[in-house]
Length: 92
Image (cartoon, rainbow, N blue to C red; front, side, top):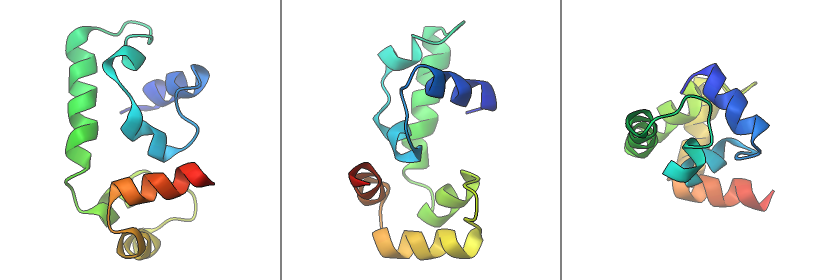
């Protein structure tokens, strides 16, 4: 997901934090400028696939300020799953 998609997610208030990405639907993506069925399916597939990568790697590649590889590993060890991390982020 590129910078332009992230900007649209924020502009449309579809995400408040990284965990919200995992709650997006095809209908959400169809609100984007120049979004088609195939591209929305590809984005949803990429999001779903990221759930099965090493969690620490997924956290690290988000590029969150002050979250390097070591911190990403600590977060992954503490939460254990994207779902638990998302629940915790939604409570904040």
